[in-house]
Image (cartoon, rainbow, N blue to C red; front, side, top):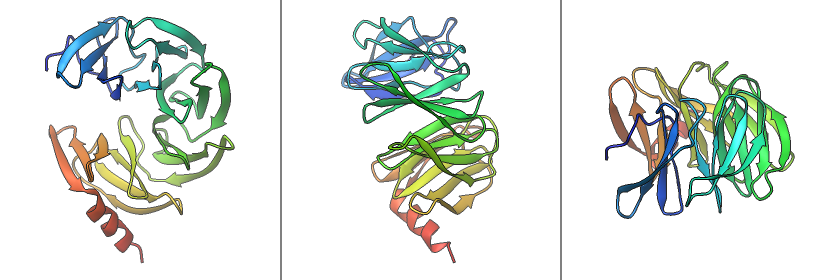
Length: 248
């Protein structure tokens, strides 16, 4: 499907649509109807950085609108900004889960959590250096830290940093997702790393060509090769079993 500009990092679904940040000038946000596979709107709000992101809550679309740290709450029907919340500068990546919007500060070492109903900042929690992409479930908030290539685990109940896990995969890009009881990350030249979410230990790691973004769904890990221009499907159950078997 043609889009009126280059897609940036990050996708989100919600309100029957796929939301695609665009690196236009100025940046913008595309709405694609999932049922009709049609572009239905391009809103005049967009991400603050190419490695930004977008997320949806029960009633709004959220993204960081500028490098100053302005979190935008957007009406999904009209594209108008309902609310602006001031976070720390250099915060770029939001993710909604269970009534909160979590935002990593890529130009620092912290994560903010925001009440998705009121827009009130609930807490600011320390993380590893330059956290960018994040994954969340009921047990933990995980951030992939571009500064030292580590993972940070935050307890969503206490808002405290629990531990860090060294992956040794620093640099720009990368991605993170959860599946099969493991935390999966990718980075160029380290296509996959898998961390046991119950023990916070690195189980296995694949090194070589490929990597940069991944998704988990339909019983599979979908892994891109940024430089090769391909996407590969791996069985989630099989890879999870192989990782556990690799541990002495």
